[in-house]
Length: 377
Image (tube, rainbow, N blue to C red; front, side):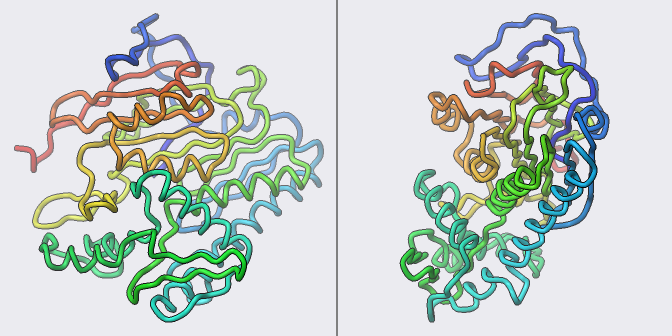
């Protein structure tokens, strides 16, 4: 599911319909609606020669669009970005038998595995952010995620306390040993798994940005699995900024927020991107690593940051942390902004929090409405 779009037209003044009480934006023109569209309308306005390519990498759709002074430079930058994505796909794929993550997981409880610089860098970053978020982000969550049916085996019943406790015993970022001197990674318990999917897209986008700039690109839009990186200046008619809109988590065809952002990355986490049905109920894939249970208090979390690794990890962590603590956490963080949507009761409008790092870039915000579903009746 495409988690946000680039707007095809200039933003207009609008209103914050709902939000945290101390974060309200006063209405200026509540009657203005959204214009929706796709990235292609904007990237054609990027100066110079534009080249684009689609593919699949890191378990998601990849779209790379670059602009450069001439066609040869644009092609070189495009090829460089795709090569980076392919390389990281081979390094970090959990189920690819030749990947370094696969080797780390296969050696869990037995021995440390020597890894290449990119794998070492993302593991170190994942452990750093696991500590910084108090375990709301945890790269060892795999066994619990699979227990809930988000893996090779489906489930028809909710996990009982015994099975949940057994899976939770294999979760814990502190059980990962990274030795910078030896360049090794070791999972200390047999059965542990390293799952970097909540960080790998962001890490890859950061490396792809380096590649396109090194190849001579002047601007670019890079997408991996719904996460986006904006490189260089945006369209001139937006004064070099990138116009984006966020789809409603309940109705992706409808936008609920619009922004104009500078170069950087944006990521959205929502449980509705992946669900399974257990005992007649839909369950989202966002699991709290601290409890082993699905998060049911949030509808979506979007983060904009200068680095895609930060936006990727924080969108997951803030979703788990929740809007109340998440808004407070982001209050003093000017270079990183978030839009947090609280899961409302069926038939009600959600509460929306926009943190300071994005308020100055807000063009319009409306509260998503959660429709009644059969299981709600």
